[in-house]
Amino acid sequence: MSNPVLGPVVETFIEEVTSALTAATARLSDVDKSHFNRDVTNEAFDLALALIDADDRHTDEELEALIDTFAPLLPDSELSRATPETLRYGPLVSGTKKWLDAESELFELLLEADVRNNRSGSDSRYSGVYYDHALDIAHVIASLDVLASTATLEAISLLRTRLLRRITDVLPNAARAPLDSAAGSETSGTKDSDPDHPEMTPARPLEELLAELDDLVGLHEVKARVRLVADLLVVQNLRRERSLPTMEISHHLVFTGNPGTGKTTVARLLAQIYRTLGVVDVGQLIETDRSELVAGYVGQTAPKVTAKFDEADEGILFIDEAYALARGGENDFGREAIDQIVKLMEDRRDRVVLIVAGYPVEMEEFISTNPGLRSRFPTTIEFPDYSNEELLKIVDSIGSKMAYRLTDDARRKFLTELDAIPRDKGFGNARVARNMFEAAVNRQASRIVKMDAPDDEALTTLEESDIAGPDANPETDADAAS
Image (cartoon, rainbow, N blue to C red):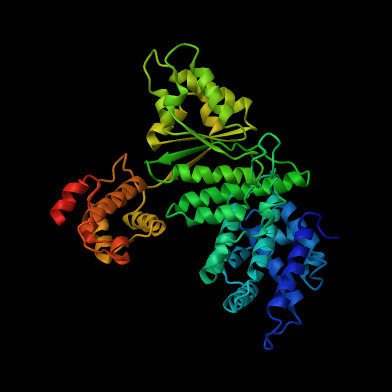
């Protein structure tokens, strides 16, 4: 008898991927189609083995599900007489995690068909079928344990990244098309509409949001942490749907890093991810800081904090430079704000997610100011400074949206100017890059107005003379360059 949890998603994977392979290779005479069902069954088995092996735990729940699901599908295998104990200490499971690093021949067949169809003007998503249902298997296996291990969640992230990278490498427009993954639908628990917010648009698919996250420049470790958060929520939702016990998880986060490192952008995406996965119903991001939370008179601070929590109801409250709340003198009401925040985090733990942000050392001091804060913020995500090359990519992105491009000499000058800026505490990162770009546009304008009849190329090109450091005076530099 097939396992009631793993069995259905494996059967769906086999049915849907076999059907996709048959359709994808219908016009290929040199492909043997007679063994597709067997090959896809083995693929599902290899995928399940690799994910069970990811954390080296090989629990009874995982191994029993493996046996119950695949013994009927693979009657000639050793599974028909296996037990969790024999699998745990035998060679069948151990070491199979390396499969996740290997190329899948079946997936590549589907991807090749998508490429052929794309070239002929039609649009197919055969590779997306594999992607969707492979992730379904991955999430269900992670849900077999009460709390999915970090290693298993990282394995899911590896699988997602590997498959998506192949898809976007050969089908550049695919990343923008929503995938029909269960991660964004049946496992979400979200509400597409809310009677209290009738203007709300439907929640965006999880994979679309993660693709937008991946499009951000740099932030590789940040992206990995966010994917882990998302995958854990997907797995917890799967367990909840099947009436399995779940661990109570705090969704509150600490973001640390210099200004301009993407903290607010990532928080805004997280708010949408939390909505898609049912953590909050609305998913708005409310930004605030000390100036909007702390009053100057007795009895006024707690109501100000409460008002912000009201505004962030069913969404995320983002407190920037949160450490400033703990930095007043004896007559300061910042501590009162912190006490009220702790109270409301408990009272509204199912309605408001709190993200606090600031410099690393200062945020550690802030978390230590109240015993209730540390236990409520179990997760810290560090946002590193951008490299010069990443800042140049950010400028390229801004320029592309505004129809500007940098010459090669201008790009080299931009990197040289960035090299001269000290990377100390308070370095502005993307803000510096944007300011330098805007200053370059100003200098270019001063140069262009002196031309008799500038053409489109002149109007859209930023030259070396247009680039200067963030502290340069654009008007003075433009006069000097002319």
